[in-house]
Image (cartoon, rainbow, N blue to C red; front, side, top):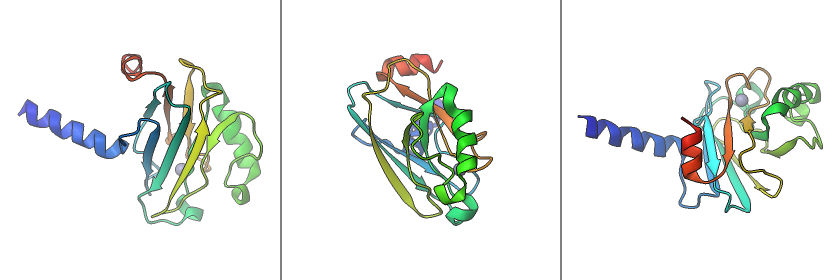
Length: 159
Ligand code: ZN
C-alpha cells in the first residue's frame, strides 16, 4: 500500500510540476481557483537561460481571472505588486520598466498559455527569489519560492 501511494504521489508531482526533460524549461499551471500548481520551482545553476511556461487550465477570461508569473527578489514582492496595482489593468498589473522584475509573463486567461525566457546572469545562487501573480489580490495566495541552485541543495533547503 505504501509503495502504491509513493508512486501515486510521485506521478502527481510530475503532473503538477510539468517536468520537462530539460531542467531549464519549467511549466506551471494556474486555474480559476486563483492557484498556481507549484509553490516551489528550482533550476540548476547550469542554466544560462530559463524558460517558464505559464498555463491557465481554467475557463474564466483574463479580465476576470487573469494570471501572470513574475519573478523577483523576496524583498521586492510587495513593492512590485503595489506598483502593478498602480499601473492598472491596461498594463496587466505589471509596472513598466521596473528593474526589480527579473522576469514576467504576459497575462493569460482560461485555456491560454504564455512563455517567458530570461537570462540567469543576474541571479545569485542561494539568494531568495519569489514568483507571484500581480493580479489584484492574487499574490497572497499565488506565490512560491524560486530557487537557483543544484537539485540536491534545493531539496535540502526545502526541509
Ligand atoms: Zn493570478
